Amino acid sequence: MSSSNTPIATPEKRRDAGFSLVELMIVLVILPFVLSAAYLVFVTLSGNYSTIAAQSEATSEAQRALDILVREVRQGREITRGGGAIETAAPDRCSFYADINHDGLPERVTYYVDGTDLYRMVGLPANPVYPYGFVDGVAERMVNLTTSSAVVFTYYDQAAPEVPATNPVPSQITAVGVHLSASRPAQNGQVAVDFMTKVKIRAMFNSLS
Image (tube, rainbow, N blue to C red; front, side):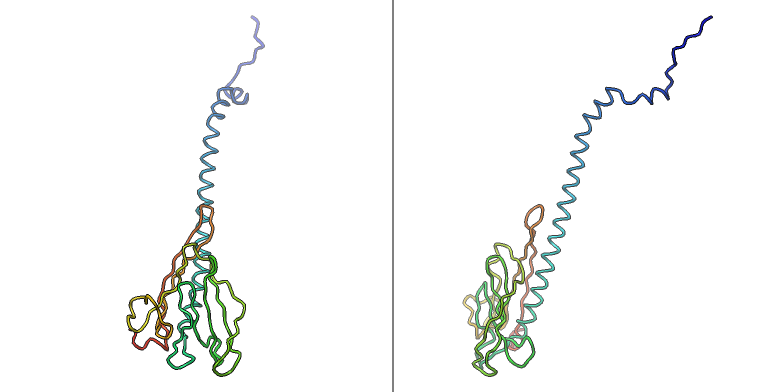
């Protein structure tokens, strides 16, 4: 009785033989779908992170600008009796007098929109007494605004302290409304944040509740 020398293919040996052609074809069919899903997840997470980061930057910048602006407007003061604390009252420009460096002399502080940025400029008095002859310093960029932010300032007077004045008279202004809509570019487009407040000029709001 002769014995055969043909090896018997055990399950272990069959596994060691590698993938079959059918298995490889199935993998090649499924792999693009898996990679596409993974890419979509990556893009979504990346976009969300970019949006959150842009929103955080815009919020931080706008909050800093608003804090400085509010503090300085609140300190507004007259430099002539009855002349008011405001020099220029426009939707995109506000100039006022305030002793922001606490040296006993007023400075002329100007906030204005140029393009899509809000700038701050301080004019120091050239003379220690009136007329002060203010000399403007270098403008400082405060915050990047959205393209629709042409109206940053509104004004309130003693005649109607709760309603913005249509044609504000600088000498009668007792409060300033501020609307900052700051933006930052993100992966999914521009991200904007809005801040609105109303600032009473302490020296001028005698009739304002």
